[in-house]
Length: 218
Image (tube, rainbow, N blue to C red; front, side, top):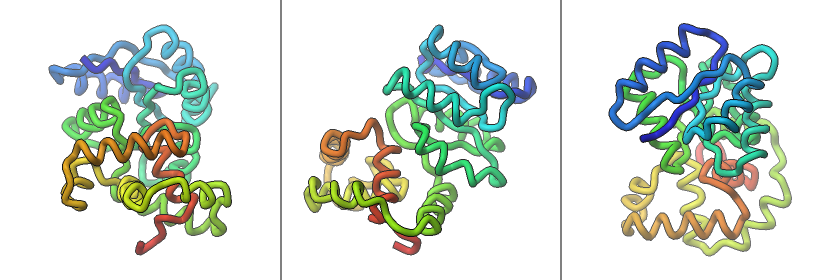
């Protein structure tokens, strides 16, 4: 069972997500929190596999809570709930350690699939969110020098895989694109994370954007 903690200051949102997720045979909602501060405490208490995190909340917002949760447990997986009018938070949340994003108007199936993807260690970066993220890095202009320097630590194939990860492709999609076994892709991703000192695919995507391996139209 995938254990989920739902964090949102709106009771109807929490109850709605709880009903949808508890209806899934492989997912269990183990708790709810009304703000970021309560979320941090409940993560420590309940140890959920995935935290569904709203951004705008009183007391402590979702960005601050995500930073604290990830700082306390590097393996924590936070799935941020967002809407199109909150795109300016996407970059900040990724830098805070979020494992991905889900739109608040997602269907029951999309919600459950998103939880499963993040629980399995994959990054959940929908194409629409990825495009906006790339645009944000483009707007920021100059790439971060440390990121560019460390690209040299990767092999040509690892760099190619990193670019595809940053574009939001799953291991299966990358394997199909490169015409290799999915297990080979998993090995490449693992080596990329180790070489660059990154904790997950989402951090790998951020690294690729910062090094300007991925650019608008690229």
